[in-house]
Length: 162
Image (spheres, helix red, strand yellow):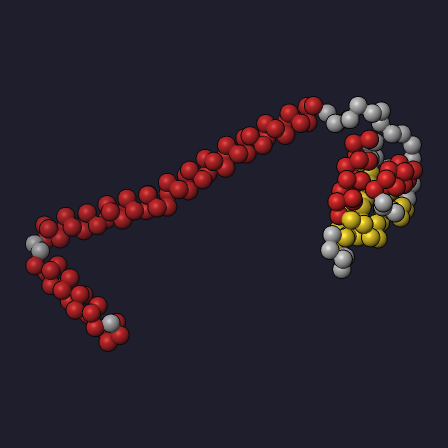
């Protein structure tokens, strides 16, 4: 089949087979061993060594990130010098949203509050979340973002806990 599609391959194949038959059994063993060693070297060079170096780099990255994470946990919450805002979560969320041009719909009282933002700029929403998390004990436990037809605008549903 290959010979009919590639006549040159047929001639090369028969030439290699003839060359192989001309070798003594000892030469055939030595050439076979040489081919096996070459295949092993090729496997090591092209597959195993790159995998090992990638694994070592990943392990080093993991160690670095674990160290940074531990330092961040030890350092405690970041407060920008201002006293923490106190009060009910609904009041904190509503008062902190106004400067960012966000009108949140807040449902619930106590330790868990659901917040819905119908239409807001993505940047303003993220700055608002960062602001109330830095200035109070409120934390976003879950967030769902949906893009709006207007570029850069989103709607969001947040679950905020104290």
